[in-house]
Length: 155
Image (cartoon, rainbow, N blue to C red; front, side, top):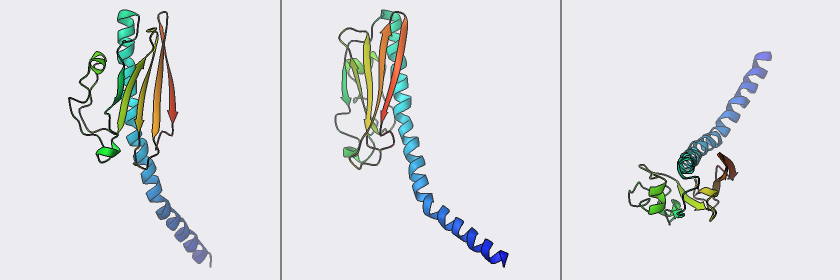
């Protein structure tokens, strides 16, 4: 008698696991893809910090949202193209992407030269709901602070 109950209980657990497997895979995939924005913004923030240490100011040239078209408009990922990030602002940050990527990137310095904002905007599943990653960089004397903001990070 106990074996039948246990068998039905194990069957129920197996069915629940099978039903949640696709959702778990989608969640894991989204988290892995979203890591791109964290990694590249962290790299860009390091580049800004290098300039601040050398000059006392953030790089002055702004970089508009790059590429201009969203990655969803290009089939879900943006192809690597050396010309995409070949602008004075991106060159000043020593930034380019050598492989396919999923986010648009932007650099907005403050006119004072003491702060800047780095952004990554993307739509990982191309459902028109975007995620936004921002790093605000503030220069206070010899100190550089970074403040991260993430809005809908796995969208």
